[in-house]
Image (cartoon, rainbow, N blue to C red; front, top):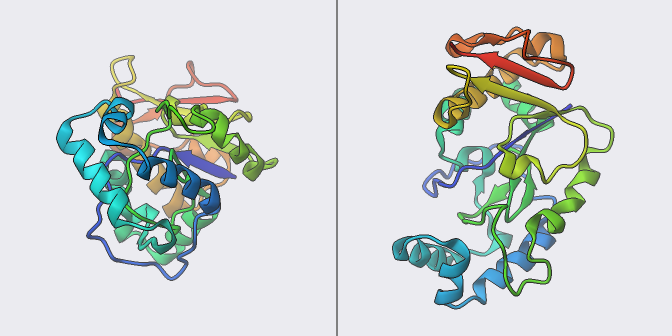
Amino acid sequence: MKIIISPAKTINDHNDFNYHLSSNPLYLDQAKKLYDYLKGLDRDMMKDIYKCSDKLVDKTIEDLRRYDLDKGHINALFAYDGIQYKAMAPSVLDDDALIYLNDHLCILSGLYGLLRPFDLIVPYRLEMGFDLKGFKEPDLYKYWQVLNDYFKDEMIIDLASNEYSKVITKDKIKIDFINDDKIKATYAKKARGAFVRFLAINKITSISDMEKFNDLGYHLDKERSNDHHLVFNGG
């Protein structure tokens, strides 16, 4: 069983904690080709691709000049600093739970393709939906189709956003969290993190046990759920 989640846009570069299972990203060679392309962009091209503020473009350019992908220094699981990761709270999980995550959790990434929890990375910003004009494969969804080979015949638990989830074209079991009959982004991100934490603490590998999730006031919505889609209702 593999669990797929999205990355966060924010990376905490000040977290130098390295877990003893630290590893190198599986698709580092492919990531380097993307990184070299990004480093070769001028500021105007960078701004056109990223469509963000001048301040963020300057920060991205600074990071590209500063870091070397061969010298990743922060574990992916502890590097990302978004709502989902705060709810997951990996820094206070015990060793057994962290080993579970190492065996089952996959973080999808525009730059790295796929990251295991303790792969060593550098701060970066590259979203899966970006159109990389001038790169040999401007569509990252096509570039990262190789990721599907990683999953073989594994059951895939999909906790990723649609932007990242669709890069994996194999059959998946989608997990959604709704509030007031809608998927609300902030609530959903927090619930995804809590769900991953629930799986890790309880070392869950079956759908029937996943259905027992009831953190943050959520419960399985049996009417909306089926064999390929679990929906949890938070009211």
